[in-house]
Image (cartoon, rainbow, N blue to C red; front, top):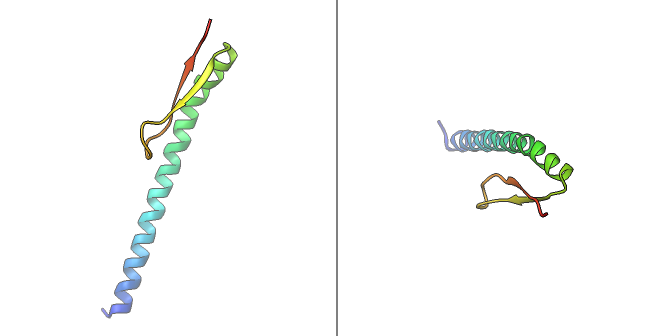
Length: 69
């Protein structure tokens, strides 16, 4: 296999891996949003304050409700 074909194969393989990782991450974000949505709506309906938190850069967000009386 010549050098150009090998480089092209590597570039295509890396591109496919990046697309797969991106698709998985988008799916995780969507699932996390759907899981947090009822919490957020119930909190607002009860007059609470929604707090969105994130532990580190790549982590998914978490939603909590602070209710002040």
